[in-house]
Amino acid sequence: MANYAIVTDLNRCVGCLACMVSCKVVNNVPIGSYWNKVLRIGPFLKEGATATNDVDMYYLPVQCQHCEDPECVKVCPTGASQKMPDGTVQVDKSKCIGCQFCAMSCPYNVRYLNEEERVVEKCTLCEQITAQGGLPQCVIQCGGRARFFGDLDNGIESFEAPAVGYDIDCSYDNLYTGNRVTLKELVEEYGEADVHHLPDVGNGPHFGYILRNRDWKGEE
Image (cartoon, rainbow, N blue to C red; front, top):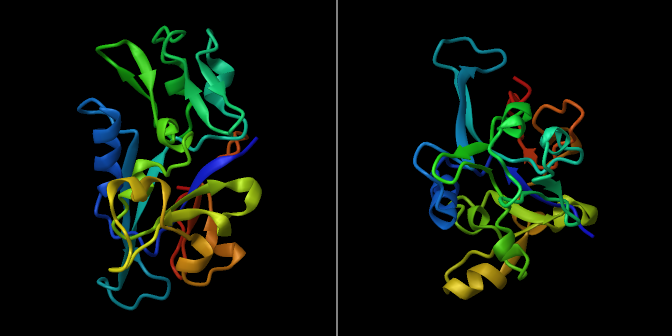
């Protein structure tokens, strides 16, 4: 049993969109659909700003939150949307009838109808990789080393990303299964108040976001 999730340090995110692009490539996501999308939050006036150009902004990656009690699973009439033992939410395409009830019920608008196959798709947390001990593609390709993958049952400080440095073996295989660095080892100090989640409407989103010294706008 596990509760797999991703935590993103938004102070490290540079908005390069590598997570979004790599997700589309590795999962063959159709044009017009995004399993992972990066939103620009702001610019907005800083607290206590004295000039109109005294602004702040940051980037917010949004994808399926692999919720604790997902609304999409509740409304699926065929059982195609399922909560798995590893904590992820997956879609069984053989059972999906393309009704899109799940997409309409998702609080984060991160499910899409594959028009060609007539089934709903979304982020799988790269189960084809993580089941073999690897990291999700969006974590591997993160240019700012802002994204970390792990098991919530072990605490977010244990979440991992590929290690960085000129002395690190960055071969393709090692990016998937070796040379790891933990969130605790890499990110700057943060407090409990710096850890945020997207709005919870009773579904219990699993993904976390670390944001220091800036106004969290995720509830909006």
